[in-house]
Length: 112
Length: 111
Image 1 (cartoon, rainbow over the protein chains, first blue to last red):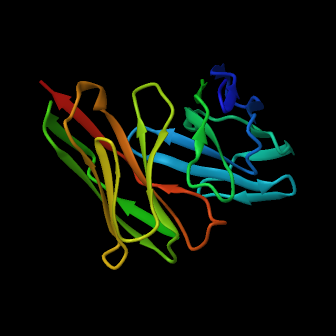
Image 2 (cartoon, chains in turn blue, red):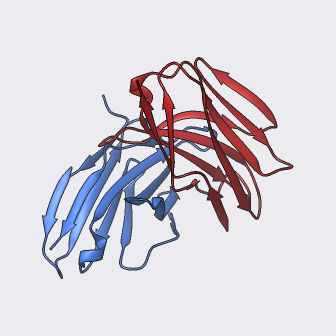
């Protein structure tokens, strides 16, 4: 049973469309994160949340928004997708006292 | 903010030892972590150092020197399955700050 689950795993969308990537976790982690991965650029933080009422911008939040609907769910939205948002997106979760972050399997998003 | 530097690529022979270095700059420091990512997979946790010294977990060890803002991941008895990308990551200045990752080191293990 995966700790962190992302849906969809792959998505192709058109420029200008709104798209939502979903993330859920089953182990009660309080902290959740969205990262974007591009070749050679590592993992860059988009948004993070320490609990349902807490949302924080990361390094590259422009063009993205998030919603923490419940402790277990953290979704990422692209209001108007553009081609340079084509990337691999990872959701991660961690418990406050824990040192390990658990990652979902990633969503490969292509904007055409 | 935080920034991390690590080599982009390393190649090593099966059975050998390889060290992947990471230097960081951060306004505060709460710990250095290492993650492994195979092609097409998700990053997975390898180790965490909050204090100076060496942490050993099987074939993998991680070292931290807070005074030098430096750490490394040491992989011993390399196996072909160790071919992957390795990321160092820092949290700082408190436990309430998120993980910030380096750009990753691509390790290729050759026969």
